[in-house]
Image (cartoon, rainbow, N blue to C red; front, side):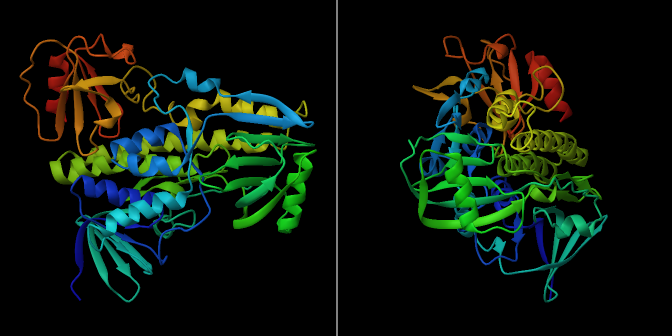
Length: 475
């Protein structure tokens, strides 16, 4: 059988693998996704999209379809001794250039199903119920062998195949897992209660903060219950919920998902091996669910990676650009593990016995990480920052920057009043922002003549038009 050829093979059809394929398709890359599952996720797993992910979904053209399905939530509350003792949401006001000042509570299955639907409309991109047996790399490219002997040749391979990644293990990438003794139950369902239900994330304080109530889309609510033992039943978790919310009571009229998980933490030693193979999502980093960063971090991996592959494969850029994926995303993964680790440990350990309040205070302290809006590449200055969202005038219409950014292209924002006549390559689009346009939300950019924005919404360069011209010539 003659091997099939494609630009990128993606192992794993979870949200990260599907997003990689979708973004690759936007850029004109050919991709094949291989996964042992029969279809996209139906219930369970991740439950929220953060503010940065919402921006990225706008760049990728997915926002309008996903956003109406979810429930906005911007407040974290503490319930103790029969009342709310804290309600906090002020951190959103400290995030400059943030239009979506909330989380969107929406199950992972909605993301997977939409991506799967869009990829199926493009052809047989996703190969389901299919196992990968081997991945080999040579100077010429990669060869992936499927169960049954079929082979696929590609320029690159992405391992987005979860915490037990075959790709990571195949290439012997160290992945040292830390296992704190923290075991949780997670329950999704429709509740009946006399508790004053609010669209807020509620941490309950009893002896410790071992119960959290997470609002979800539609009629569903989620509860996380720290059990600290692997041997428990649904009734045990429900008893903890009712103890935490006294004097109120709660029961489930219907349960859509009930599971348990043990907290595990690790970051792969390498995200990019043999100049051909990438790790993304849970294959590259795992951590506690606290802070809702898992899905969001994995999707950000995809947005960071695929435009770089586009530049190398379709536009002939130096393959050294691909190393920046690891250089940029690995420190982010480490900060996510640190943040989620501090959060999950605070539910059990507190010098003052105020675990729930400690938890919410950590959310406020680390809001840049948890919302995704504080993630940057590089240590200082505008280069490497996310470009802030702000109002722009396009023709007769007023809109926002993130609604017109294009993932397949860089965007050159020209603030100078002069007509530049700058000759741009086809992968850069120019947006000339003349006087009188509403740019008050981006004051840090106004003293520059121009700002070059990467396809993933981070700043590549700022300065004079001549400096930008030289930068583009070097790309």
